[in-house]
Image (cartoon, rainbow, N blue to C red; front, top):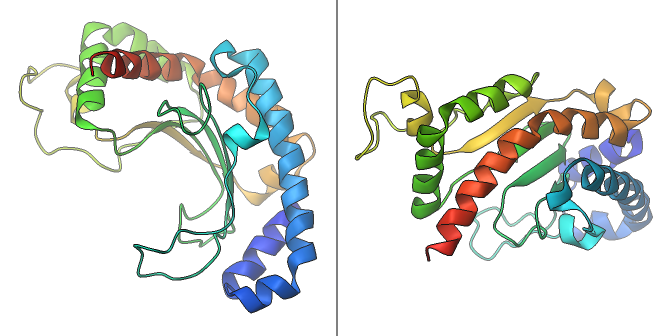
Length: 225
């Protein structure tokens, strides 16, 4: 993965079509390296979590080209690679296991990380998740405890408990969350050491209970539409 990081770092400093065309072979090499890793990770996660079994590389990865139509930043290329392993693939709407590789100081997520869950939920989905964790708080508490090394994403939350839910409960902090995800930063040593897919899968395996709870709540919301 060292070559992947080096290419992405160079691309960040030269994010234009002329440079990219001149270094197309480097991109193709980096892409092939990442895709081999992604395919192995997808297969391993399918063995760990049956809800994501049978996915293909195309179901889980993204193009490097940015959609700049509605963005003030007209840089043509993403400076990160990612793989999202979610039930029925990246377009299903369900939460998944996300691996992100980005040189330190990047402007997307700011570095390499693992993320399980999602952010910016639609209102009915967030309502369903809140109801789920209120009905089964012990299950969520156990899932969070099992996810050793991950932290709950508290980057966006309400200042007050949402309307219709009780205050003063142990679950009140959960009710205020706008994002439902588990996050773990990983350094370049983790990224470049041998056996990356196996190690990432081992970390994601700690979060399967959490993802099951969130996706079950999402399924309820989807079925009510």
